[in-house]
Image 1 (tube, rainbow, N blue to C red):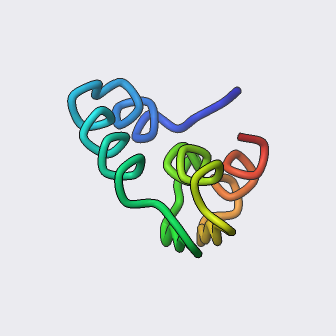
Image 2 (image 1 turned 135 degrees about the vertical axis):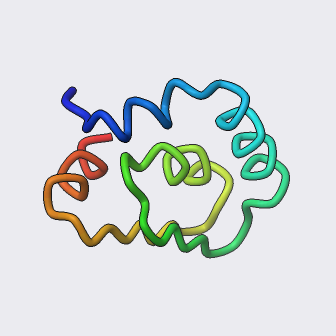
Length: 69
């Protein structure tokens, strides 16, 4: 899977990802909106907990990547 260097930097920040994972795990329910979804990692974490997830990404390359994830 190809990711941009910016995305790679964000995805390698374990402390940041852990904080987001905990918040998503504790708060996700109903309908979730992930605006600027990037790689789609946060949406994929919320999906099993929510009724529906809307993942929105402006950049076509990044949106294609998120769709695969």
